Length: 364
Ligand code: ATP
Image (cartoon, rainbow, N blue to C red; front, side, top):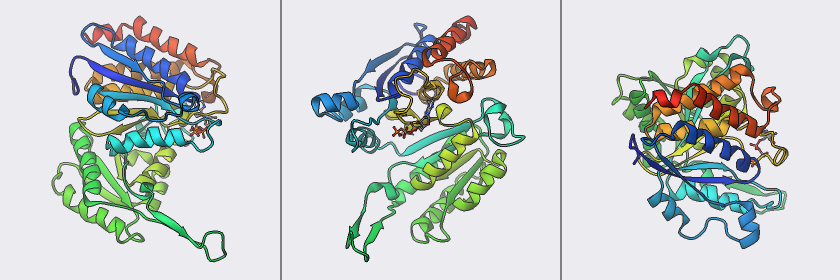
């Protein structure tokens, strides 16, 4: 079913807060674009989230990971997080559980400016801001190795280990080069802090030097993360692909999201090539605006485009992106982007645009 096949099964986990408001908009746009008999998508919704946790004490149900791995091609995820669960236990169990158990080692975060007015950078246009960050998603400081010694005393010591395996580093760097080759992209930049983190990022240096030799057709270079942070703001047009570790990827991709219009627009994918992968908007559950009907659905809609592109349906993904571009052009957007439309109205507008322009039909 994956990679250009004719049909796909999608697990939909809307989750909490605005996740439950934006995800249905993405699903209805997907249905509009892929509704022809030749491109069926089957959706199965899962009610995993804070309500279920509070009701039944269940976070990630037993057998849930196996079910998703064996019976679904991809997961469309909303967001998790609820003020009634201050520990955020359900979010940790479900989201981190899926990332680790499905071994989703690539966190792909496109940074693409879809309308000039959305960037805070002066004199930058759409053609300048079009890159993708590949963040290592299974290792680094996020593995939870460490401890606290003499806690609560003036002599307290806290240690958090940065874990980097040869296999983990190699597969994310290799993924970046393969993506470049397969998508006709010319430039890969690997970023680390090997001048200070000599052991951990020394490994990144060695692996990068080896792997890049196999990809002489791609321009590859290295920047320390502090230099990258300056350069991406000074001139984002110099980047096509950035590959980096878990921590730096977290930070630099949020910086990138702001360059392209903010959290409400940013999509992401948690990917294991060829296996069931999970796609989610970068934003969280945003309890401050949940239930008001004003959440921006475009991040989720763009996420769904990423998902079907991963499934091999690139033309359909392009239809969704052009609908989003058109909504931005018309300023048919939610208040976070300066508009006055609500979440459902934006979703309806996109569905209507897709139908009216017969874009989906032209693809048959
Ligand atoms: P969580 O704890 O689940 O990560 P959060 O509120 O801490 O939620 P985000 O949801 O990522 O963090 O977003 C931070 C703020 O950005 C939100 O409180 C909200 O004001 C704004 N925001 C995020 N996403 C959207 C969106 N899709 N539409 C409108 N505003 C948004």
